[in-house]
Image (cartoon, rainbow, N blue to C red; front, side, top):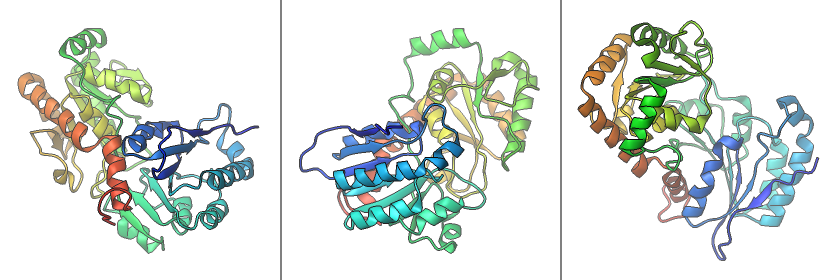
Length: 349
């Protein structure tokens, strides 16, 4: 196969060059983030090749390594920005790339949270200059694994795709979708947060029936509410067409970790009722731009209250969207890390 997937996105003579190697197509909305911050951008995306399973990727990894190394040599970037949490590239290839580019900064960001760091992320973290993760609660855990350097960087979202629509558009969607409460998440038993997800989903479904929409797999027991899986960026539509959005993470006890689901929900401008995680108050104001709960009973009471107090709910939703647009966009995400690395303004890391 010919890996004809290397792209140059813009022409910016004299600018710093970024070589972006994402996990898969889900992260391609970072393109604008790099270009808006004044970088000349190149990308190489090995994710989402039609018909390729993980075993096929592993068998063809040598070819992908070669394409990656040639691109490093041709582009000569100042910054190699990777979002790898599986071995699409071999650690050996990244070691060779660092020899080709002795003055470039190599970073790897992972938004994937597990109880223990993934072995590949740890292995890669011993090679790259900086590993970036989405919580402060696991920094020491990563450091104990011997990574060269690990720092915290919260996620951002594409605010061009998650935003508050006009009141007219929202009203049309509400009539079309016919639900008041929405939760977009798979219902599994795989993570610590799964039990509360299941409990709240079942209670909402029993209480509100079809007025509650549960998008994702695993909700067969909630027949009145189950809507099936939904593409990621389509979630903005169902959020805008609802009165309340529920957000519950897979892990709810890790300091400063919350899913990008919460950011997307808030970005839509609909009030988000979110599971509390340690440190959430460092980002948001309870009752002003976000509402949070700890117990299932608290969640149910909040849903009932805000369905009955729509004006208050509406203003919290508007405040939340404003906060996301200002502080949690992909452009802001890149600005933060680029500043931390010294590419923009004063170096912070």
